Length: 101
Image 1 (cartoon, rainbow, N blue to C red):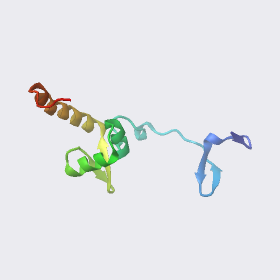
Image 2 (tube, one colour):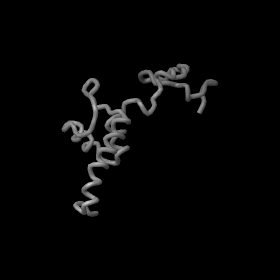
Image 3 (cartoon, rainbow, N blue to C red):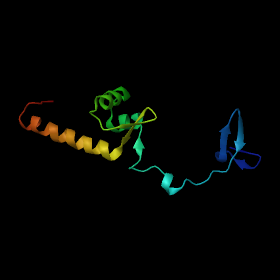
């Protein structure tokens, strides 16, 4: 959709009216990558669990995370390491027949 010769993709909401603001490229240093912090929602999706499970595990100290201004954040590399530790801890139980699914 265009209006007055402008592409609406370049419109950014400012209050009740739309104002045309040119979109500037995001500097590479500010772009999100695998080393960036993940939110509770992202971690929940990544682990395929409910967000309350992520909060509970983080609060207990079972899931590696940290708070920024009172909000939980997680490093993907820490979550991946945690997954590997969980798999290793579960492996002896499976090999001894203690856990059956």
